[in-house]
Each structure stands twice: as C-alpha cells, then as structure tokens.
Length: 85
Image (cartoon, rainbow, N blue to C red):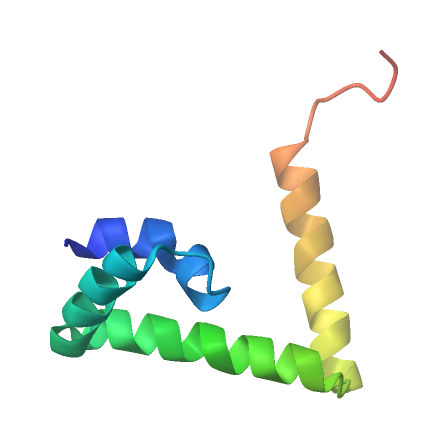
C-alpha cells in the first residue's frame, strides 16, 4: 500500500468501516510509515477532542485578526464579482 492509498481510506479506517483484509494491509503500511502514523494520530486526537465537546475559547486579539484576514482574503478572491445575478 502507498501513502496516497492510505490517505484515501483514512476516514473509513478511523470509522471502522474497512474490510478486515484491507485493515491488515493498512496497519502494515502504518507500522512502517511515520508520516502516515502522524496523520492517523492527529485524526484520532481531533475526533477525541470533538467528542469530548469541550469548547476552546480563542483569545479576542487572535479572533479579531483571524476575522480580518478572512475578510481580506474573501474580498481579494471575489473582487469584481457582481452580487446581482
């Protein structure tokens, strides 16, 4: 199995929806591929944090900067588009 194949099947693996034979191949690749181990570990941690349901308060200064950056990028990507169809 190649990393690209593993990444395509990642969600199904984490959700426990893969066939046992494919899981075996997946886990064999994972055992020898540190970058893929990191990806799987991060996904698992993200799911665990999400399920825990603990909100994380973003500092006000960071939130304001994020909003401003998003507005600027939106405007630059959509400059010249008409809002009237």
